[in-house]
Length: 395
Image 1 (cartoon, rainbow, N blue to C red):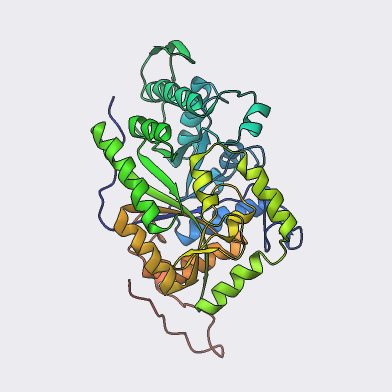
Image 2: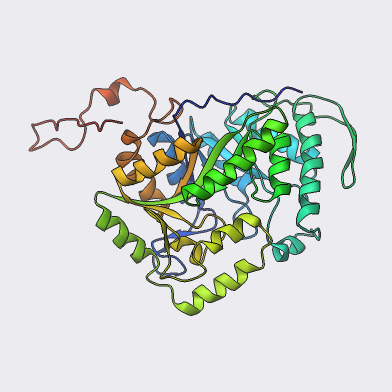
């Protein structure tokens, strides 16, 4: 079976944004300034990301989130270019059902589906969902799931018998737009996770560790992929707090966690410690739950991870500083960033306006050409008569 092609490593990048289906607001861990994550609000973020030229949006998954497939299906007809990175959940879904859902969403979105393979790292949540397997056994299920899923999506009649899953004469009749199937994204820091990624996936994801940690992880992933005769594309998941000056950005970072008390942080850290995800352990080790140890690398701040699972670090600084830090990751091989910021609507605009012009973006990220837009005016007309001069930052 052929694999979807990987884009060349050309020193350029795509940028994705995030749909906060588990909540949004101006402060972490507080109801003050919180927003109702309704479909109209999510539509605003998705349409802003589409208009601003983001490559796509990630939809989170888990019991704390609205269902990512339902939300993506609702938003796909309301956007034009935006891709939707949606999770399949081995162990929670049968591969045939997941394949039909993926093929349908890829068709109705005209080929704008991306697949995020999520094995899950919280044993308590997983038991609530009926999954009682240990860490490595869950990756065994993921491996078997993807063998079946990929075959079905590629148009094969699948006969498969594994330790956990079985298929006899499985078929998907309505094929996806993308051949042989939408690209598979996968994040896993453990040896078992990296092996599954190397076997099945096109894009290897990491959370936002300092560059040395990312380089080490990508080296392990690259070695595993090469043993399978393939190459990864690499993505990184980060938050971002960018302002016109560095001091403004750091003040905003402190404001974001200003409503957190020590008891809330301790409770959150105790809950996160129950996870058996290697990536989550690496995130927590960056700060150890200590709000005095949050700057873990130049312009890399771990404050989000005090109370949030998964991605726990943010790039903080001026537009030049954030762009420079991103270029350091690009030099390591990262060719796509999945970013978020609080609140997500405003920060989507701020990042695109301040940082996009400073990045080596692929043509797949950035506004589509428009004669009306290129002819201006760019900004409010001064005194009802003078058109502002357009200024474009150099890459």
